[in-house]
Image 1 (cartoon, helix red, strand yellow):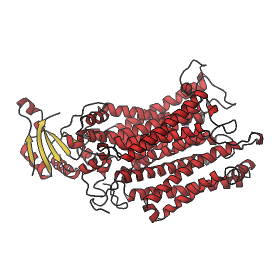
Image 2 (cartoon, chains in turn brown, green):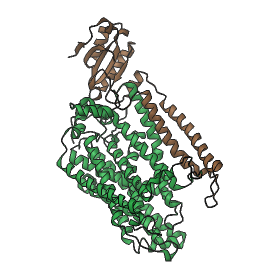
Image 3 (cartoon, helix red, strand yellow):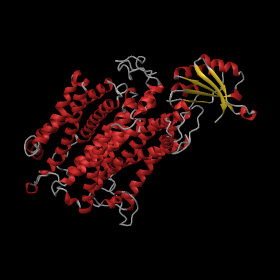
Image 4 (cartoon, chains in turn purple, yellow):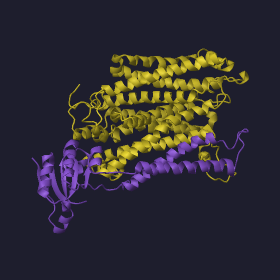
Length: 184
Length: 455
């Protein structure tokens, strides 16, 4: 039995209303999304307890994160190696038991480790900035149990032409609840 | 979709997504059991003794230790290498199994990563107290200073060590923490306690679980995982160069980097097994940490034990085959026989022989025996570091500088202190953090020949 609830009454809010489909498992959500995609119904977002590659594919979500991390690495490797050569060879060459000051192979270790450290720090910062997450931020999500056991699909009401058909499609594919509520 | 027909069911019992959250969050919600209170009291006392011993060291100097001109490195370096070794498993476990897409890691990685962070913190204490004047710690940092200007020596393995361990600690801790963010969000949204909601909400960073958050999270995990895999190999290789780049007999060996890395993974996996058995037993999480998980760890241990045995044999063989009299003396008269015979054979028995019992399925399935073997491995790995450090230093090229070494109460105190700090960290982790990665376990709920069949 599918429960349908409307939480919006104000006409202004209605323009900014989302249709929320709640599912009990990933399989049902993905099946519903595939069906909606086939009918070219635009989907806004999902909220799930764990990541799903099927969802990323259906929503055509992409991220340049790995490429950016590679660029960080490239900049770091050049920067660190230059720094080490500047300090140890150019700025203040120190004679350690007659060993050559330009000891390139032994500079590799420090370069690699600090490059890894730089990639880590910059990747974490990029992640926090792009995902807009930071300590103490108040979470806003349509259904609170989506971090526990519910799989949530969000559709923009204003972009749906045949609302009844979409709701029917959601319930056919196993939505346990369909809500209408103000977009967050 | 990945299926694990070979490994079978990954989670036992009639689990739902909600039940998984509930089971894993239960130790956080429930009152701390009496054994936990007793254990944390003992751990804190041990840590307090350690802090006092560190105070004595800093107040009165390194003279409170028994290290001397010949054996300049004693328990502090033994314990430093020992802790770093243990600290290897968490990242090795998570990272290698993550990039190899091994789904069975999901029940174990969180605790293994926690263990890594606490072990590396313990390891980091030793070089600092060994400095004698720890307030001058910043001298090792490369910055334009007013003392020369004199830059640090970028060619020194000791400096590599400092960089590698600092980086390893930071990366392991970040990897661990970001892995917990979605789980903190689960606790935030599930708990009825206002205080817990506020605390876990703060640490959950406003996590919602939207598709883009998850996508970026996945990418971040793989980037961190990929680069940390390099660290797993490089950190202990670098630690080994502290020894291998010297000319001390028994140290100057090309075998050292892989030998140290494998040894580190060996001791770390043994500690993972110790912790997993404790978690399984005391928190009744047998449906998540299954026989299959412990079986897999035991099989890894028996395989690595063979490598360790081969390494020990190789060292002795090369000492003999090279014809180098100093190497011959070190191995045949100062390890296999001599003052430190017990420590050498304890190492061989604990690391190369006892783990061979894991060939037997009955042993792998018996948690008590597996637990005892895992402790023996960590004891054996401690003896290994003792052998490397003390035997080689106590009798080097010059007989007039030969000496023996035994620790003072201060050195023992620091070691017990780090054991206390480690176990305090682990116990706090048991109580306040989800011991198993909730969202990762949910991912594998439907894998492995559909659920719900109890073994």
